[in-house]
Length: 394
Image (cartoon, rainbow, N blue to C red; front, top):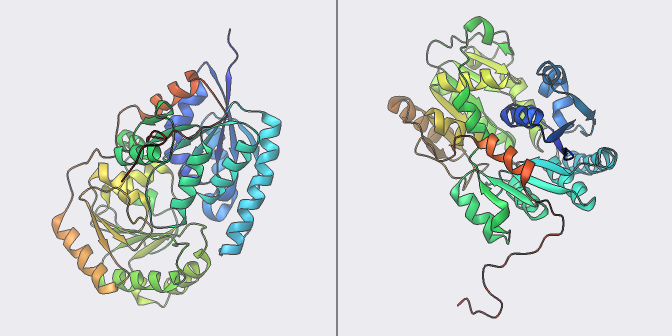
């Protein structure tokens, strides 16, 4: 019997675990793969991902190792130092586990550090979601990971074209569609008021009636995240309808945004008497919530990808998702409260959209597993130049 391929899957946020769950399950059960789950980042911090390790183990998975690699602070220095510590910790892990393949998801700064460590240890790197365009430092990180990676699983035609433009070999680039959207297509969970309002703090929201969902993260290349968030706060207050507000992620800028939210949710702040503040929920319940949401407001990739398939109206604010492929369900605005209010009201009048398949391909996770289990592995990359040497391009 052939030796199993050892596949390391570093998980550094609850979102990555939730969205990759179908893929992880298929890797776990494949007879030719030895799956090694490695935890780190905010997934180990209770304030971002409470009890996630227990959730993973209850799912039947074994956690190979865990690293507490987050430097607290919520600013650029903390973000850079976290990346440095991540590289150190995961280098030790890869040296010990000795994987054949390291799977990297998306564009997070800690994932770049992990990819760098794996590359210097001569491990084959598989990158999921390369080639997308965004308006944040994440885009640079995503493209850097692409240049370190050997196998590429992209989510759409535009991303496929961009990865090839970066000199990647076409025989190692696969348009599989989005794992996030594949998961959204399978969720049948039904939410109840009692269940959902057991999460978070603030006022209970009746999810059987129209409500907004707000998810706004920092933009690491901007210096006025507090002011931008406060514009959204004024807009939500002016709309005067129930809202569920998710706490921002751990990117640089989260400190000042979190401070503004804490003041915003003070008990004597009348503007929050219809809002519930939540850190996170299980991914199935998050998808069920998006299905019920009258309009998603903020700058989350869930508004671009999952909501495209679900037909949920979205008002995308600012530059974080700038340039990312989106369907007609998205209306883009700047950081102006009046503009945001007008866009949300227009979306509420418009109602739900027809589902879009721009990010959806059936069997995305199965395709990725099949490739990881069978493709010829390599570590020495070569630039694949689409223009023959000496040919004039003008």
